[in-house]
Length: 313
Image (tube, rainbow, N blue to C red; front, top):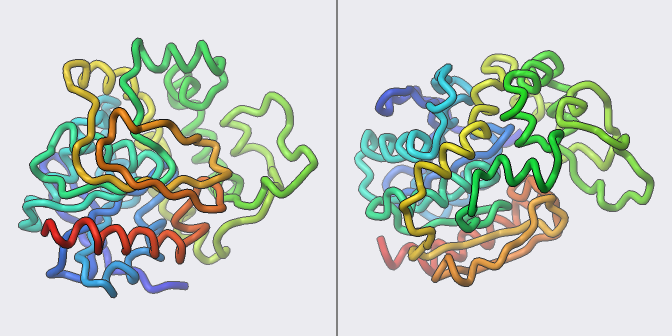
């Protein structure tokens, strides 16, 4: 298994974050993981970035790993999540950084140039594009479009139910989630009407596990310790985030990189009117882009950083 940096617990404002660092002294690059993940999801990117002279900063975000996990739902809104990153940079004596995110980490990273533009050199995101401002309450719109069993709606309308099911069946849930190559199969692998809670109750047997069993145990152990309530609370702030950013122009002026997975359930969107300086790539993989295609991800990311970010630092 690839060597991973030692953890540090760093006080960042109101919370403590479990942080992994490598390559001190170069241009700072902060890597933000998604749901339901861990800083360990960036294990393939850290050595590649260090090799090219970057200072890599990888926090377990609030609610994950050994980082603080506040009980209040609103503690996981976009202002708190972005402020954690800024407070971490302050503690480390970093003025500006490149922010890189995947999944929910990408959503947080997209908020950074909107909320803290003077601390951002550029942003690079995987899977989740920059979304336009919702015209109405996003959870209501998702419920109207996808029904009550859509996972984001479920987390909001039935708080605690999914988190308890995931915690009771952590390894099964993560084994079902961390899959790849299922798009090659022609037979139906998911029962009709399956909900997010079923991901913890049945064995899907679709595709293949996209990591080794040893690597899976890192994630399993982390969630067996932290639980899933905090991570699920991120989703319970979609409406609050929409309200908090009502008066903010949704436009990113900083240099931006976007990497999609061709078979990801998250589909590309046209960002030409909202992200002014954007470079886009698509890889032959699913949702877990940097873990499914580490070499290709590293090549794209390092090339963009070298071309676009180093001259600004």
